[in-house]
Length: 216
Image 1 (tube, rainbow, N blue to C red):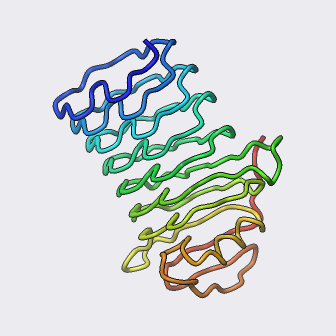
Image 2 (image 1 turned 90 degrees about the horizontal axis):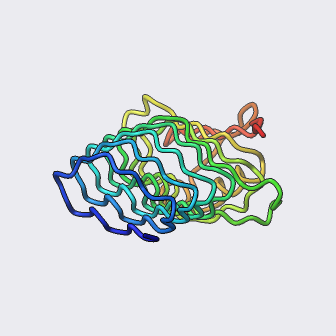
């Protein structure tokens, strides 16, 4: 078996522990729309794509280790409203489109790393990555990637501004976020104030800190 794509998708009552064979390279949409599914799945190092793997699993809330073999996590946890895990996105990943879209309870520190050996030319797509994550609190973006993407942080703001969103990065990505007209809310460039070690947007209560120290 080399592919388990869509194997259990749209089985709303499915909730069994599954061992994915080491021969599998494609696991996209494997549990998509399994609304009751909530099992900790070990993804083998052979898998290269986990796109939409747990999409629309409304009860899903497991800490999943993403192996270094995976290069695309697009929509992996999208529309999982109960998902709230600290996920480490390793240096080989290139595409995170819609990764946490509509994960309303997500408030963990999400760390997105780029491959340090690739230098600043490495392109990482974060389009819609955190759209509608209205409890998101901390995101760390390693500064040596070339970030692309629109609506990355759209609708993450709180109506009462009671909780801030803290984006930890370096000066390069801070400028991208500030100058990208569609990165924050998709409706123009918001006004930013210069603060110690970064920038602040009062309208959406977003801080961008540029003195971040990145681990090896």
